[in-house]
Image (cartoon, rainbow over all chains, first blue to last red; front, side, top):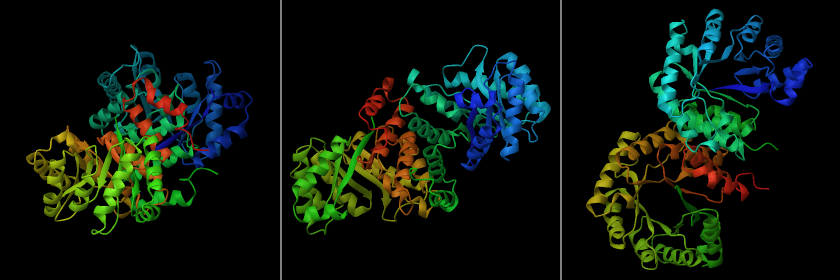
Amino acid sequence: MFHIIGEKINGTRAQVGEAIAARDADYIRILAVRQAEAGADRIDVNAGTRPDREPDDLAWLAGTVQDATSAPLCLDSANPAALEAALAVTRVAPLINSVTGEQARLSGVLPLAVRFGCPVIALALDDSGVPHDAAERLAVLRRLVTAAREAGVSDDMIYVDPLIMAVATGDHAGLVALDTIAAVRAEFPATHITAGLSNVSFGLPARRLVNRTFLTLAIAAGLDTAIADPLDRDLMAALRATELLLGRDRRCLTYTRAYRAGLLTPAS
Amino acid sequence: MFHIIGEKINGTRAQVGEAIAARDADYIRILAVRQAEAGADRIDVNAGTRPDREPDDLAWLAGTVQDATSAPLCLDSANPAALEAALAVTRVAPLINSVTGEQARLSGVLPLAVRFGCPVIALALDDSGVPHDAAERLAVLRRLVTAAREAGVSDDMIYVDPLIMAVATGDHAGLVALDTIAAVRAEFPATHITAGLSNVSFGLPARRLVNRTFLTLAIAAGLDTAIADPLDRDLMAALRATELLLGRDRRCLTYTRAYRAGLLTPAS
């Protein structure tokens, strides 16, 4: 079953940032519940604030969301102090987003994942930046998976992220991501593969069309999780149709149930 | 570049059948022009009538459509007499839809394709019916490609059709078609691969969602032509987004042009 990590609680979005600053718990709770009800399997929380404020903000966000829904969290921060503050309040081990091949981030974040028994997202970049082709990305990811294994993280607790770049800035950005996904799926069959979908459409018009088309292609290549907007009905409909067509929806039951719930036709 | 074969002029559709019976050339012409303007690269013509009437009807359809648009035709019939009557009036060699591994059809239709220099669609079925799995379909298609080559048809004049079955009657119907497409692409890189898209969604609700999602998956697997409805804006938008994401739209020019023409957003 494909999993959606709901992306809406992100402090870099103006209204969410204001809600965090004002400690508007109702606003955050509603956003968490709406995403869970729309089919999010996890809720991403990203404070998007300055490093000195982030520990307090992320811990507040994590506590607020976990009181509103039983969906587990994804802690979205590169700041070990913020992660640690949020980990201190979460009751269910959250997914940590993320470690990279950058030495500082690897040594700062990976030990926290081990200590708290958390699954962890591993991004395909290192101190040299984001590699341009699929083979180099795979090489970075191979080193990351090796480091995670050596730290005691099992493959099914690793969420590999191929790092999707914008097609608008490089014609082959989609292909590189798809090739990386397929290569990871072949080499590390037990890992999860996840991605932030919306990067692919950055700078283009009709972004949601590009995002949902990419989701279909990426699932076929081996993606099994995405950080995305579960309130985007067309995206969720494309997800249901993709799983149906890939033979993962026994007797079309999930698809026809979604149809009967009115989820596969345009919102009125 | 992906090619769409416009499917609307099909006598099994009630209004088209009436137009054929009444020799309503205007109705047929408008349907041809609208499809070509919407992006159809070829226009399928299917008389859908009894064998004794089909030669006259198909020849009339072919003549009517070719007078209305410069898009080449696809003659959709298993009846050699009807094909021959239509071939006698067409000025540009049409695609013939189709030959199969059935002995009568192979010996009746393939010689016509050779004699008139026509490309030909080869369907994955033989006298034993439609094989259930991808390996058996590939075996049927291998015999068909061999027969076509021996008759003097070059690979780039062969349009292999994996025969898409309904997901509603078999959970793995989509996967079998996708696997067959990928296997044909690997074994016969110079052939075209085409399919009638809408079969896949037979018996399901929200069929257009399933059809366009399948188109995206099938293009990634190697499909380069589809018999489909070019007037389905969402389908054509999914096609543009898929080509963009697979690195086949240099500098996103086709995509952004389609957006500016208002083709990528819901019709008002």
